[in-house]
Image: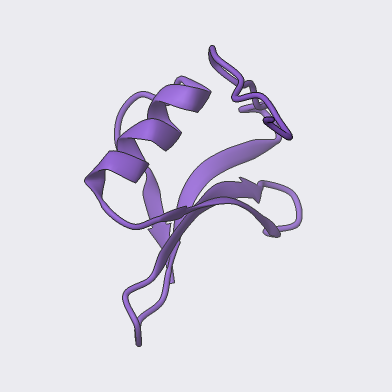
Length: 72
């Protein structure tokens, strides 16, 4: 029995209000993908990035083209 279904398709975000970023740790190298509010600077974390495959999944889920800014 499955407790939840995996959704297919792209998810949406408001590019006028938030921008996609990778929050990176200087000490451990851990990376978390999320969206930074352009007005407040607050970052809402979406998923842990363990490798290139996770990053590509994040980019494709949200339909993001190009590079994602890293925030330390």
